[in-house]
Image 1 (spheres, rainbow, N blue to C red):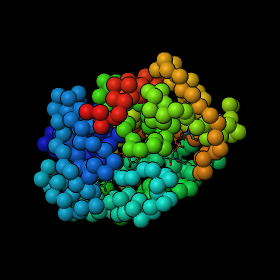
Image 2: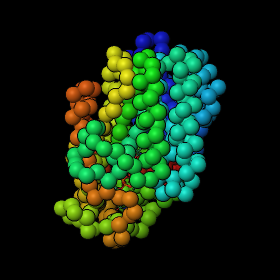
Image 3: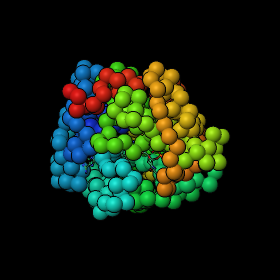
Length: 344
Ligand code: NAD
Ligand code: UD1
């Protein structure tokens, strides 16, 4: 049990990719869960599948995290003891063309949530931040105390919320806040029933590769092969979404006897190049993944991977699933659900 027995965890954005896997992990740990999601980037089907796997369902409320009165009511009615805050928008390119929408959902949404929490007397919060706050890192592996400096509006929304939360924690010792900086979440639950279901053309590597392998797209564009990395393509720290989900449970437990704001990297500490991913996916799926080399994508770092030792030390957490499992689980989800949740 994460909270005391009569308390609930509120999961904002719980119908989405990472939120649905974490909701499942909470339910399987015996925790009562309320999900608040406006379904702007997800389907309620994900929660039906979560219920199928867990054998019991979370309470689902379709609504917006910016609706302070609604959030306050949920916190009270469900005796919420802690909040996992996933709700937000995450497409880097879109954030540059729609900054108002991004600041509103991500920054104003987090502000409204914190106001509702303070009013309801709920002080334990875990926030989904991103390695994107490090911008183009000067050195790798990246430690939490290294300089931040996001290079796009999405990253700046995460960075601003981190600062907002730091100011809250400094002002009132009742706050117990965990900031989790995820590296590159991939994979899916081993059942193949839930996974990442991006709308439109995927922006991220793994969903794109998976859609090429399943025949939905012709070929992958590899964004640059002239980086100062072993094979010239970008290196990232891919982490299995179930490892990430377990990291949230550990963070909630660790916060129970900690006050203030604590920042933890969630990554494996191991980097893989784009071409290594392509090869690993071909191996796992038994399908070809044709690709062509394209120009670099603006704003991309050559290499980004975590030093995850602070999470290991303070949370007793480390990623357990390796590259093969990440690829096999992505492929199981993609091949069983070629059209995502839209496929029924
Ligand atoms: P996702 O889009 O699958 O999930 C986000 C969920 O939040 C969706 O279900 C969406 O409908 C909901 N939502 C969006 N705005 C909302 C609002 N105003 N009110 C209520 N619900 C709202 O994304 P994800 O990959 O699961 O990411 C979850 C969180 O983790 C996000 O905050 C994201 O920025 C962060 N993050 C993701 C990654 C990644 O690569 N996936 C990396 C680092 C950080
Ligand atoms: C991107 C975002 C980052 C965000 C993260 C998770 C940018 C600049 N960064 O990170 O802010 O937190 O997603 O949502 O968008 N690649 C290809 N072809 C593709 C797609 C990607 O070669 O079609 C390469 C990229 O150049 C990169 C690697 O694959 O080297 C991983 O890309 P991606 O999955 O988009 O993640 P990040 O760039 O790490």
